[in-house]
Length: 271
Image (cartoon, rainbow, N blue to C red; front, side, top):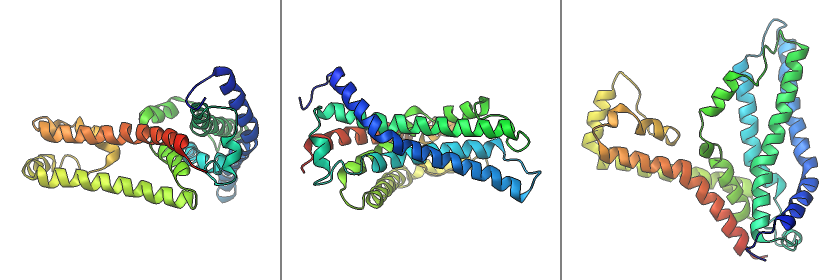
């Protein structure tokens, strides 16, 4: 049963986990919604004529969902690899694959969706109650455009790494995961910078001169695809290949590797 998947058994497991964890998820949803209410009330107290811009509300819901996704593993499954408390979860009548899928769904899908729904409901209620302060509704074209600017893989990069970190570390999970994540980002950036600025030194000097005054050149893992598609790299296949390779490593390799590592960790964990 260790590596098998049975839909009926999975349904029972997921139903059990959902019932046990939904009170905590709703608690977090209420906290994020109350913060939005606090923003509204603060605007009333500071200046009765001050509006809360749509951009601020979109940034808030984006940040809240992102924060919910990275903290979900530590909140919902903090005791999974505990030497004693984890035994109860490991003894559940379900395969490792079923537990893994349930964990991913609860942490990266269910909790963020509930928090999104809660914030959207709260924002809509405030906009309906006092449209002079909350003009318009979040569910509009601007909101969907801001979401579409990020790829599906990019959204899950950090959350998947934090899910992996929660399973690897037994103590000081959050701190160690943050430090590990920063270390990985730093190493990738240093390696890419070395390749571009030293291996392709002459070509990069020509590109930098061509880009001067038109756009600012920077090595940022988050805009590797923009750099890859830049017209300035059209005549430099070696540099374009390198940038594209690191773009794939960042947006695909990190989340897929983290999710695969999480599954392997669950299969091999020792209590």
